[in-house]
Length: 188
Image 1 (cartoon, one colour):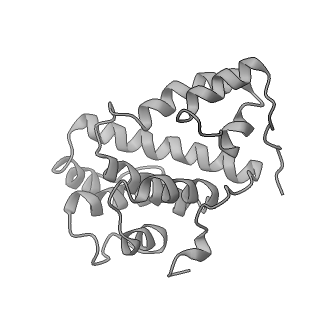
Image 2 (cartoon, rainbow, N blue to C red):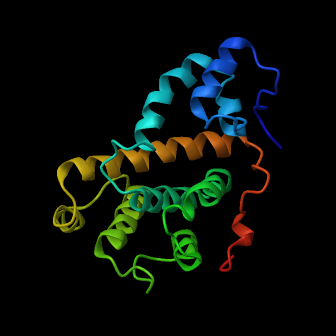
């Protein structure tokens, strides 16, 4: 049950205007955004950063971005955000069901990870999740695959989605209708 209830329409004009900037035209705002909108100044402040993380200026590919996000959400056990990203982005990112299962329950050594960069992303997310750091050996390996801008994007993307997961889980945001659940994944 939600601890912070999401706003429901009709929205005040300032809230409606902000929510409209956060969703594709004609798509109703998701529960997380309607929950954030309870603190409109915070929602406005975080919107630019969210647009960067999901936008074209991020130095990672769409696929790499979604690998980081899905792994972070799975490690945080945030079914809400994991489900939204599987529903909206997994196919666009070219992630197979086996890869989504691996991101959710597996390891960087699973056979589906044949690209070194992708396995490295999992290793980095796991290290950040487990220790809030990347040790020197892993960092050197990552530097061989990613430039400094990309490494900074990985670190901040993972951190951003930790924050999103903390908010969604702790506020107990209701799961989106039609979004996959952890139990839907074949390894659950």
